[in-house]
Image (cartoon, rainbow, N blue to C red; front, side, top):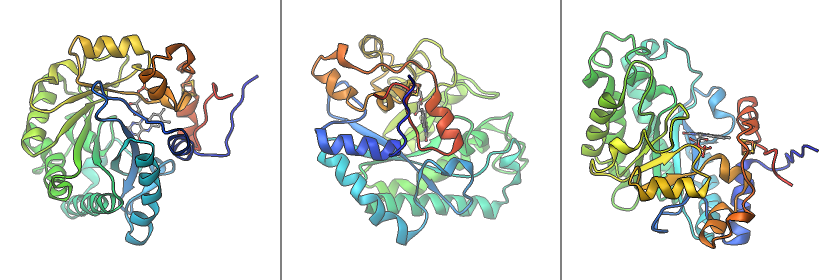
Length: 306
Ligand SMILES: Cc1cc2nc3c(=O)[nH]c(=O)nc-3n(C[C@H](O)[C@H](O)[C@H](O)COP(=O)(O)O)c2cc1C
Ligand code: SF4
C-alpha cells in the first residue's frame, strides 16, 4: 500500500526530526559542514516557484518567522543555509522582458533577502543560479536574447550573477558563508564557460560552489573540473547511495556531497551514515513523486514513508 502522509511539509518534518533526534541534514566529509539547505523566495514577483518555499521579501514576515527554524536546525547540531531565488514564473524570454530598472530591483531584493536571512541567524546563503531559473537564464546564450550589457558576450551574461554576489557579499561578512548553485552544462553553454563563471564568482567572494547537473551522468563528473579553483565544490545527484558518495569524495571529484531526495526519504540519513548503520537507511527509489508534489505546490511527501 502507498502511504503519503501530508500533515507536515518537508521542511516542518525535517526540522522536527532535527530537533527531536539531534539529527543533521546534509553531510560533509570532514563532518564539519553539516548543513540543511532551505529555499527562500525574494521579490514581489511571486509565481509558481514560491509555493513550496519560505518567503524572504518582507521585513515583518521574515527574520522572526525564520528564526525558529534556524534555532531548531542549530539545536540538532547542524548549520543552516538558505537558497535565495526570485519566485517568478519562468518564460523562455524572461531575461529579455526585464528592464534595467527591473534588474536593479532584483539585485536590491537579493540584498534585502540576504539581510533578512542574516538577521534570522542563517550560517549561509546561496543565490540559485542553476536549473534554468533566472540567473541561469541570463547566463545561457540560448535563453538570453538581450542586446544590452546583460546579453551577448559571456561577460555580459555573467553580469547579473556577479552583481548579486557583489551585493550580498558584504552582508555575509565573516560569519555567513556565501554559496552559489550553478548547472555546469546547460542550454548553449558547457564546462569551459562555466569555469569562467566559477572563477569570476570566486574572485567576487563566493565561498562554496554548488554544482547541480541537469542530467544523470556519473555522479560527481560534472563537479570534478571545478575542484581546485579556490573554493570547495559540492556535488549532488543520486549521492544518497553511501558507497557512491564516498567514491566521489575519495576520488576527488568533489569536496562535499549534497543529498536531496535521500533526505526526504529518510531525514535520519546523516545520522545513520555517521553511525555506520547503512542497512537501516530508508532508500529513496527515485520515483520522483516528491517532485510531483512540489510541482503541485507541496507539501512534499514520500512514497517510502511508513
Ligand atoms: C522536493 C524537492 C525540492 C527541491 N527544491 C530545490 C530548490 O528549491 N532548489 C534547488 O536548487 N534544488 C531543489 N531540488 C533539487 C535538489 O536540491 C537536488 O539537486 C536534486 O534532488 C538531485 O539530488 P538528489 O539526487 O540527492 O535528490 C529539489 C528537489 C526536490 C526533490
Ligand atoms: S523520489 Fe520517491 S522515494 Fe525518493 S524521496 Fe521522492 S518520493 Fe521519496
